[in-house]
Length: 157
Image (cartoon, rainbow, N blue to C red; front, top):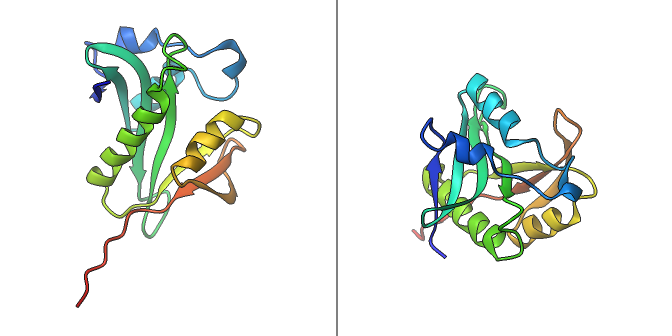
């Protein structure tokens, strides 16, 4: 696998909009169309296509929100999906690993937050395997919030 992320632009938008989830996953995540509409209104969001080489395999959206979460802000990885035709091939785990690496580089030392619909056990297990833990909070849509502590490096004095 050669996973990488490309920002959604007019050039790849049609392909990104063609991504689909399995029927049993409906209700667990907003459609890509809804995500891109939200990103068009709220500039903090950064939507990206997930690619294996030239093949589009998924979608993710993340953003940092300072004003909404004073005084330190929050980094949200709010959307993450693998196209139904690519599920079960290891793309989810590898893409999430690389996306978290990207977030660590772009937003050093920041905790990462996400929300998950109750009952989405496969997603919860995947997120927990990467260190996400439930906070006890609910987001604005009533979804359970999870947090992954940012990597903090301490130097010996």
